[in-house]
Length: 289
Ligand SMILES: [Zn+2]
Image 1 (cartoon, rainbow, N blue to C red):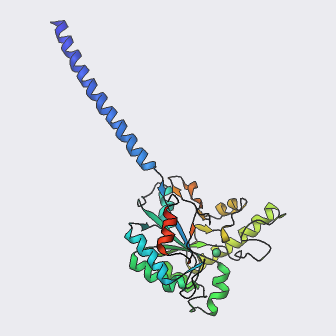
Image 2: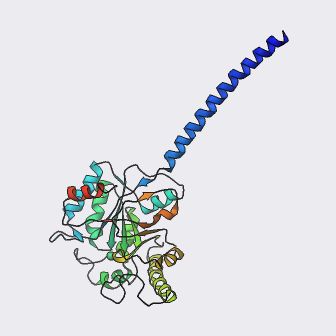
Image 3: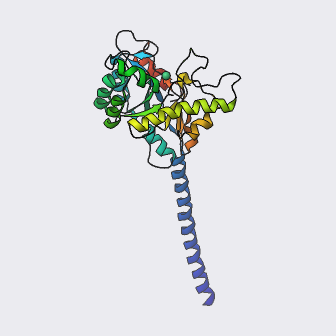
C-alpha cells in the first residue's frame, strides 16, 4: 500500500514535472523569439536632397515634379518617413520604427524647401530634416527672401517650418561650408594642431546652435558634415556639442539598433536630378536598403 501510494505520487510528480518542463521550455523559446525580433536592426534608407527648382535639374537640384514623384513612389510602395527624433528615441529604447522606414533630408537650407516641399509633405503626410548653414541664413536670406531658386530660409521661415511639425532642423556649420577656402568643409587642415582645430570647429558650430536657441527656442541634435567631409578629429567636438546623430554623404545602408552609437555616421544617397524617380529608387533599394 505504502509502495503503491508512493508510486502514484511519483507518477503524478513525474507528469507535473514534464508539464512544467514543457511550459518552461515554451516560455524560453517564445522569449528568445521576442528578444531576437526586438533586436533586429531596422533598415533606414536616407535620401539627401539640396535645392528644388524646375528649369535645369542637376546633380544637386531636382524639379518640383521629381520630388513629388519621389514622395508619391515612397507612399505607394508603403514607406513611412521618420524624423531624426523618432530614430534617436528608438536607439534609446523608446518607441518603435515602421518596418519600411525612410528619412528625407535636405542640405543647405534653400527657401524652396519651404515654398515647394512643405505643401508636398502635407499632401503626402511626410516629414523631412533640413540642415542649414548659419551664415547663409544670416547673410543671404534677408537680401532676397522670395527668389525660389537661390534664396535661403530666413529665421522667420525656419520658425514657420518648425511650427508646422513637418520639418526638423540640423546644423550644417555656421561658416564652414566651402570647398574653395583653405579648409575643405569642416575637416582638419594639414599641419593644424588638434587643439586649434577643436576650438575652430567648436566656435563655428556653437555659433549656429546659439542662433537656433535664440530664434527657434531649441538646439538641433543632428549635424550634417558639409560635402560629407568627415574628419576623425571632429567627433569629440560634435559629441561634446550635444549632437546625437551625424549625417554623411556615404552612399551606404543604415541599420538602426537600440544602441545610440549607431547614429554617428549615417549614410545618405544623393538624389540627383539627372535620374527619374524609378531609376533613383531602383538604385537606392538595390543597394541593401
Ligand atoms: Zn551642404
